[in-house]
Image (cartoon, rainbow, N blue to C red; front, side):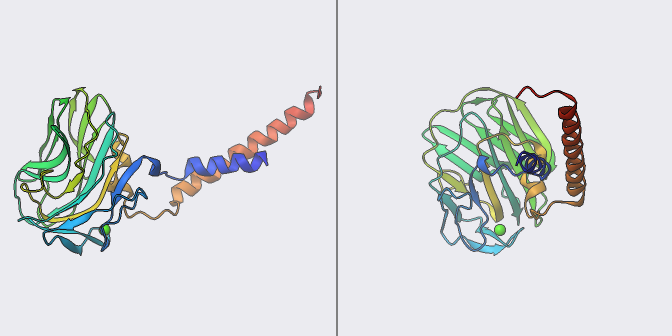
Length: 256
Ligand SMILES: [Ca+2]
């Protein structure tokens, strides 16, 4: 029983874990706006937004004129978060919002301020924005973008690589109850994306770079060969511990 528990613990520690508990909303846009986090915050497509070829299956397809998707998502933690998505832009619209959350005067945005350069805005945090360096999202290609905040540093990632960060003070307030807008400004009337957006995910923790969907999206849950090797090493170590424990128990007189 104890041994089985130990083996299970080794197995659990060895298999790469996607922190599903931290995911508060997720859209795969495979022909539906269903929230695959299980929280039921399904997205609605507006003004002709549709589904097209995705990074994985289908994606949200937007015309850059007035299309967007939106949901009543309000459940973001205000002490830490990660916003991420795969995007494929047909042209540089400049100053667009890929993911946009809003309430009153509070907002959190993952966007593009200038020709594909990843930019963020988070009212209440100082500095308010990160410009994601000189590297741009190229057009007509899939790129993964992410924006995290751990309570002290904001970070922007492009294709799993940190492209900008800012030491940050301040705090967010309110619960962003105007919801999540995908592919347009939170006001739903400007800063439209022309292109496709796939695997939108928001977590209530600051994921580290190697935990981003750039590395885990589309990856089978079957352990990799190196993971199996680690597991077998783990089993060997546990076996050794159990054997030496047995020997020790034999050598020490029992008082029980
Ligand atoms: Ca998809």
